[in-house]
Image: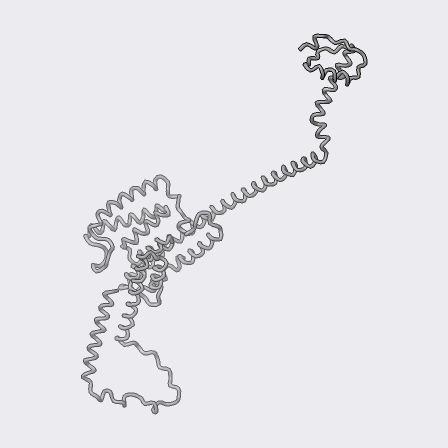
Length: 404
């Protein structure tokens, strides 16, 4: 785009200089007033509408140059926001470029999609980042950054088979670069990777592929983090899941996956159908992954709701049981407060009655007035007992009974 802007500016400057030289050589008769209408000669009747005229070459160059300058200014602002960590601002600028009314070259749009994928990845929006990587690869199948970024995103959500597929594709691309001894694409195309870095990257990639194959063989393919894919926290509600799923389904619907192609300017029209096929295939895979994630998260939420309902039932039953026990205790306490004599009789008086029965039995069996077995050290207490019994006659007491 920068080279195109320089070429257009140079052509415009040369055209203006040529027109200036040509106008100097014109005679004064070329600028006579007879060639221009006078206000009195203009009829008062309404003039018929003039058909839209075609733009001249100079006007077309001016408009195209203004459009290129606008795109470059927006891209510069987006890259500055991305470098500063203002990811939402960078996404907004790149979206204005990618969804503008006028088209843009294929390579320029692919680069903007790739940068917006970086911004989406940094802000935690994994589904949107994968979608932008898919569009970049549809426009440029040999984009190393797009393959690497999509593989890392799939590894983040533990979707290992798809990640392994992208890494295998990247390995084939590295091998082709080493075989051809040049980077993919035309010579003027800019790459973020250098040729001398490819052998080291290939060795690291081979090691990573072997590790992923071991993880797939151990059975880690079923542990996909669908919460991160959809962009939800664990323990989210059903309404949050339905809202996020609706937005993602409308945004990444396979039928709308080829709309971006209309805003691309291709150097060769033969590439159009292949770009549409790649875009449809990648969008369909992402859409299926989102639907699978929705069903998985929804089943988890339903299980959590059932468990929560069961816990509430258990808590309600425990509360009812505790209330019944408390009511019973309150009733017993009220009865005890209203009739305390029954409590006293039921307690120590029962022991006194038993003692009286034993005493009466012993008095009936012992008709003699001799008290035996009285072991007491206090003689005053013995006299008190005898006076309470009402004895008016002397008692024969054994001396051993008073022995201490």
